[in-house]
Every structure is written in structure tokens, then in C-alpha cells.
Amino acid sequence: MFLNTIRSSEGARKKSKRVGRGIGCTLGKTCGRGHKGQKARSGGFHKVGFEGGQMPLQRRLPKIGFTSLISKYSAEVRLNELDGLNADVIDLKTLIDANIVPAFTKKAKIIKSGVLSKAVTIKGIKVTGGAKESIEAAGGKVEV
Image (spheres, rainbow, N blue to C red):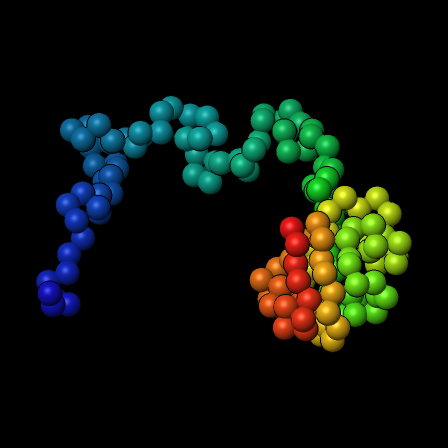
């Protein structure tokens, strides 16, 4: 294959309509715009979403944004936060009692941020791949 032989596939480039070339092509005189009216005029287009003066849909609907319902009850825990705990077995209740996660937290995940220097056992808490390696390198273990 050579650069001078590259071509678009058949039908990929449609020829543009030649308007205003007489009655023989069905696009003469009014050029397919019909007779009179806003759409027949040059520059006669209204903005996207215009509803003829009625309050447009994007302005009628309330703007409330998006708040994830899951994020309220889930938390992230860093490895260096686990290092400050005086417990050998760490579960969700231990994290809540130590004030590392809020009291209404239902699930937590340990992420690799910081360093863990002591051996701990993690029970019932999700752990990222990097954090799992760091926990096991420190002599701890993860039980799901």
C-alpha cells in the first residue's frame, strides 16, 4: 500500500446539493426552503431548544445536580491511618471506634497511601491491590 493509492470508500464522501440552478433539479428558485417564513430567510434560525416563546424544557426543569447516594455511606482509609491504630485485627467497627471513618459508614476500602510498619489483620474491609501487597509485606494478612 502506498500513500498515493489511499482512497475513501465508495459513498463515504457525498456530493453537496447544488441549489438554485433552475427548475430541472428540484432545488431551483426557493432552493428547497419552501415559501416565506423564518426558516426560508437567510440567518433565520432560532437557538437550539427554542419552543416558540414557551419556556423551554431546559429552563422548566429544576437544576438539582447529582449526588451519589452510595458515597455517603462509603469511606476510604489510608495505610498510614491504620498504622496509628492499637489493634491487631481491624474491621469496620474498629475504624468507627477510632474515629477514622464516620459512624454511619457501611463499607470502607483501604487504599495504598502512606506506609504500614506493623502486622495487622484486615477483616471484612475491601482492599486495593497495592494496599494488599503493602499489608502482606509488613507481615499482615487480609481476610475478606
